[in-house]
Length: 344
Ligand SMILES: Cc1cc2nc3c(=O)[nH]c(=O)nc-3n(C[C@H](O)[C@H](O)[C@H](O)COP(=O)(O)O)c2cc1C
Image 1 (cartoon, rainbow, N blue to C red):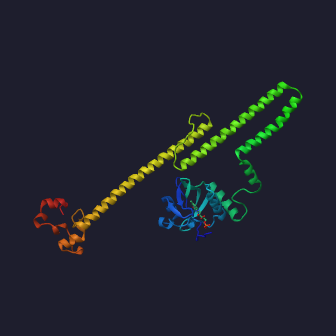
Image 2 (image 1 turned 90 degrees about the vertical axis):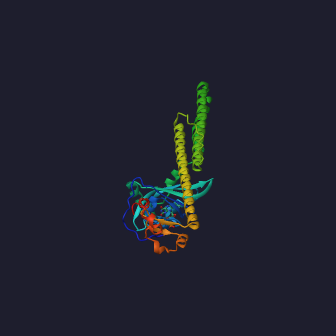
Image 3 (image 1 turned 45 degrees about the vertical axis):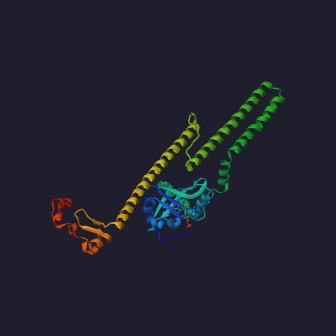
C-alpha cells in the first residue's frame, strides 16, 4: 500500500461538468490522462504517464476498496465506487469512479476510468463508510443475512421460474386430485385447463425475458467491440421494444461519434503528413541551396552554411543587419526594393 504524504484538509471542488479520464495497462500503469485529470491532479502529464495509478492515492482510502476494484477488474467486470484522490500538493478531491476493462477483438487490452464529481450527500456517505471500513466495522460487500438475501434475489432466472412453478404446481395438483376424487369433472376440467394455460404462459414469459436479456447483453458487448450491427426488433410496441430502441439509439450515436473521431484523426494525420513534407522540403533546400532568412522589414535572422560560404561572411557578421547588405547599391535604393521591405 502506497502512502502518499503530506496531505492537507483542503478540498479541490470539481465543477459540475468535469469528467476525469485515465487509461492504464493491465498492471495499473497510467497510459493516458485527459486534460481535466492532469489539471486536477496537479501533476504534469509526463509525471503521470508511465506511473502506477497509486501516484494519486489518498491515505484515507481503505485498501479494501481497491482490493474490491481489482478483484472485479481481474474477473473482467466493471467497478463503480467513490474515490478520494490526493493532488500533488496534498489537497484532495472526491470522484465517483467508473472503471471498466477494455476488450479488443475479445482480448482484454487495458482498463479505463471515467470519473464524475459526486453530490455532497454521496461524499458524506462515502466518508463515513470508508472510516468504518478502515476501522474494520463494515465490509465492502454485504455479509451475513444481507449476503444471503442478496444471493437469493440474484439467483438465475430459470431457477426462479422453476421455484415459482413448483410452488404453484404442488398445491394445485393436490387440489386437482381432490376435485377428481370428488368426481366434480366440470370443475376439475376448468381447473386443469387453467393450470395448463398458466404453465404455458409462464414458460413463454421465461423465454421472452431470457431472449430479451441475451439480446441486450449480446448487442452491448458487440458495441464494445465496435460492431454496431444491432439486430433488434424496433417495431415492438411494448417495453421490450422501448429497451431495444434505447440500446439501438445508443449504438447509433456511439457509431457516429467514433466515425467522427476517425475522420478528425484522418485529417490530423493528413495535416501532419503535409507538415512533415514541408519541413523535409525546407530541410532539403537548406542542404542543397544557399538560404537566408529575414523578417518582414528585411532584418537578417539566419543563413545556412552554404550561403555564408558563398558570400564569405560569418553568421555573427550579418545577423541583425539589413538585407540591403547583399543588394546591388542602386537596387537597394530603388523604390521597388523599399516597397518590398515596407520602406525600410
Ligand atoms: C483504470 C484505473 C484507474 C484507477 N484510478 C485510481 C484513482 O483515481 N485513485 C487511486 O487511488 N487509485 C486508482 N486506481 C487503483 C490503483 O491502481 C491502486 O490499486 C490504488 O491506488 C491502491 O494502490 P496501493 O495499494 O498500491 O497503494 C485505479 C486503477 C485502475 C486500473
